[in-house]
Image 1 (spheres, one colour):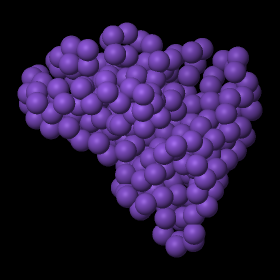
Image 2 (cartoon, rainbow, N blue to C red; image 1 turned 90 degrees about the vertical axis):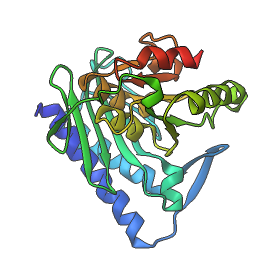
Image 3 (spheres, one colour; image 1 turned 135 degrees about the horizontal axis):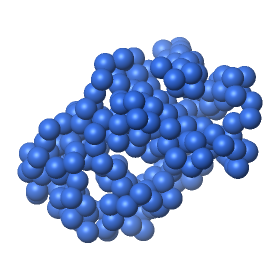
Image 4 (tube, one colour; image 1 turned 45 degrees about the vertical axis):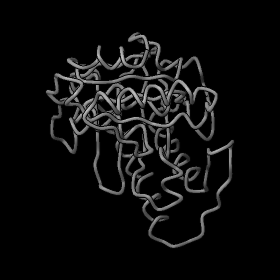
Length: 257
């Protein structure tokens, strides 16, 4: 394992232990609304601080793009893109689908990825050119070749309700043309599920970089395709992402139009 990925794994597991301790401890959560339907708790902040502390001790010159604490050292050669709890609303309600997402960019290109599910103790990792892994076992995207056989994941555009009309048309199309559509509420885990073949494709509108960075690299290293709604590489900038097995990627893009 690359030394930088090893630090990311250690940071993700430390965050996961903080999350699990809070989930099992029974202490009241302090929930604050950042905007409509978008929440943060003291556990989000504690988990993010733990991640950044571990990374800074190992790589003090690196920069961060973190959901709760913002951006630092924006021009750094390496940037860590962090979501301490992807699926905070699920976490608040005790719905066991949330995870820690850490992506690492090198000169603007994704280089390493960790998505950790502390509930199931599932650790997804990838390094550029070295494949994707689930708990040290190599994973690949599914062999699905037809959209009508595909199980798709999605996420509601809760931050961009002005695009709800577009999204509901997309959802209606895939409910008619795919084998099934699932919405679990944690994009990083949905993307990791595409990487390991549990889902055949995924799309969502209006995501942030920390929702997508790690999961996107996982899929690419597992043999899948990732793009924006035009199939291009600008998903990190636009926030709109489409990911799938190579055989159904084009059909997914066509349906999103």
